Amino acid sequence: MFVIILNTKAAFRSIDTELVETATAFDASPSAVFWKIRAPAALPVIFAGIRLGIGRVVKGMLNGEMSIAIFGLGGLVKKYGAAFDASNVLALSAVVVAVGLAGKLACQFLDARFTC
Image 1: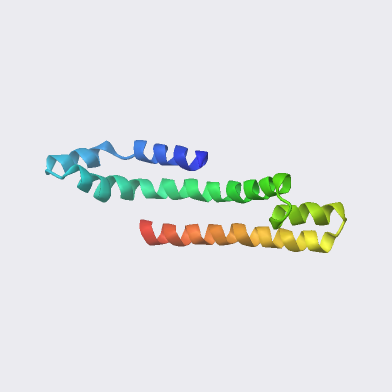
Image 2: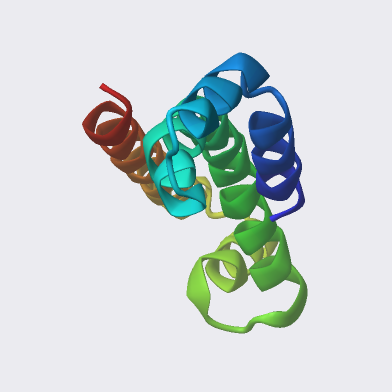
């Protein structure tokens, strides 16, 4: 969440102030300024933060499960790693990669949908 929050804050700070000033000069309401200017201008940077966060989420999920879970992907990786069962560890690694890839593709789809 930290990366996403920082990118969102930076996105709203980097908006061209001339656009906002022009909209207010033409008597746009604050909600119209937000939805028509601020949000569309900030979305590409927000989605960049989400893409960065997805990788950290998958890594954190696996590390957390390896630390405290008996079941789940992390628990299974820990169990099969201790038993030197390489085929199952690699299969679970493929599942983790698939989860990360699915998150990345979902983020790309939403980014293309809302920023174009």
